[in-house]
Length: 331
Image (cartoon, rainbow, N blue to C red; front, side, top):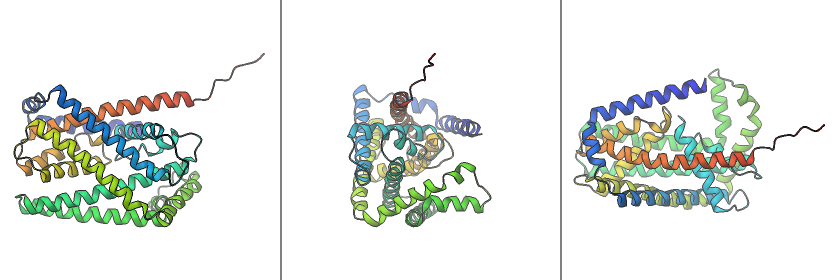
């Protein structure tokens, strides 16, 4: 069943991607891609490396409050493996969170998973706040019609509501609350029933962080704001390399904010097609051609695929090393 859902979601994403490329014009997209030199590709690759190093450092600040300090390279490997699994599954980039616990043997896996959930929560809060600010700035300085302003305003309200609900849910028991909601809807998977004690412990660990390390949350949020600006700078540089007309920092922040919001949709792996169509819509508001939007999307997907390949390679090697030795028969 899971494989069928994954295949169908991937097919849907491919169809959306092909539709976006066809509507935007492949020639314009290829012309934009042809403007990048090898040196410019190297700059973008270097910025992406800085981004993932910073993302790992952010998680380490949460992790160190739970467990004994671990070598940075081990956390880095677990972090990019998490990203790889989240990228290839229709899970709003959340499906790889358990991978971090898998790749850190000898440590309480429930606490590692709790640290990964908190890390992702702080990231989502920061992203939502930055997206809301970027939208408000765009509404203030960019010309747009009433429908666009209405959509932007509704998105700001929705983002704030979801963040508040997530925060309250974690303090009261997020996973057990979700479990009970599924039960009320008539869904009681056996594996969830068996996992109830573990989910209770994870909820208690997360709630304990909010009680005992509340002061650390704004500091870690500030680090995620820094990683957000690194992400935005990479997109700004990409748009400059592509020759985007009338580029400003507000326009770059709007592109990164709405693009990241599309990646959080769980419909298809890595929001394939959805991300491209979102960029086309944003570029339309900014007065940029659709081909430029697809070119930006393709560049970012190529960089993401390179890191996905690295994460999958780490996952494969570490799981191979962790595999139990084969039993030998004795006579």
